[in-house]
Length: 121
Image 1: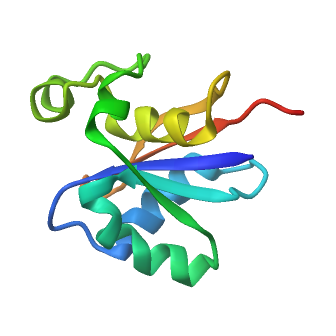
Image 2 (image 1 turned 180 degrees about the vertical axis):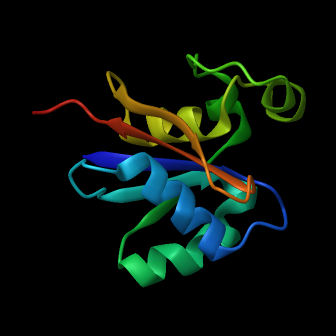
């Protein structure tokens, strides 16, 4: 399982999210799942539909429980986690997941994306 996790501003568009994904996914296998905080899931749905991929919302407490290599002051203040996109990717990929691409920012700075891989069976 390859999961793209997202963080975004309220005014982020599907184009912003797609651009963040493109920054993160360069040269990697295709993602199989998209993830974002529960309250940002409506912003992610157009991209999920366009890519024909499932999406999942991550609860605030699950995000806050994930240690991330990136430590953004804004994310820590707003969500109590170092990086929303990294935490969303890791949480959705499940226990034992590995972050394979850290936080990447869309050119318009409205969205972030990170990619995690779940453990293989």
